[in-house]
Length: 338
Image (tube, rainbow, N blue to C red; front, side):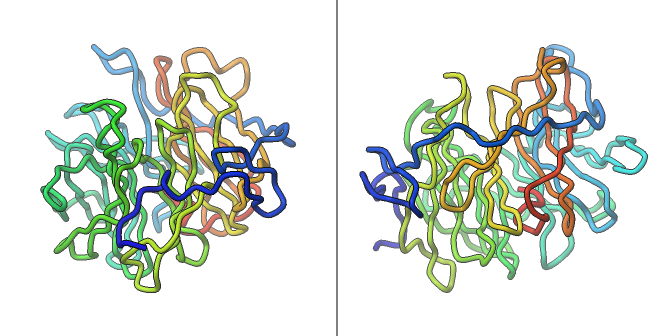
């Protein structure tokens, strides 16, 4: 197979995946969800921004200090664009801001201990563990085309795998999104997959053999198997069609726990859906019914490494919140940011 690939082009129709029924599009047909989990509100982290009357939290990730870090996508300086939650005291404080960035995700590098931030406007930046020393890691076009970085995951060597959300806004609903691999030092970038329908979430599987990528316009989770060097896609398959929510919902970020389960976040309703690695529905995580007014997204989760305690960024015109629930398995690097 070529170095780059288009995910929809290789979905196999009418197949069986791990004994689950697969529909005509190649995705797992959903039985009734077997389990519902009600998350608990931890804290209201932000208020609606003046002029926008909303906020949008994303990218939760635990630092080495045990605090939870997350971004406010629509914040404007001098408001903090990266915030920090002390999970013990439930106190929220500002961690980092700048004039220009529109940050959509955050994750700690396994190599240099810095927090990496995707800027939707086309750059990858990093800051030190105390929020100082901001650096531009990567900027510019990738193979001749501008990039709108959305989510990020690292391999063990610190190389970055980024979803390029081009096609989500301008041009809208065009299958021109990509998955991009950026060298750890930011010196080079290559396209692993293209012609994607607004790719958003991206996570490695437990063994770093491939990537789970969720596409907004298709409400689909796909798996991209990589070669041993993790520099090319050798096969793809559809894991699940996330099609049982309201019509306006879209698949957002995702995460993978120690058992290989996939936590799929949602833009359009405050819900997390949990699948097995074969696409079998396992659980739905919701905020309490009394809280749902004014909350329109549950964009991402982080499971505290070595525990089952999961934290979710939830937002809408009611403000930005952090909720928690007990995950199905323990947290690992693949469930800690991005």
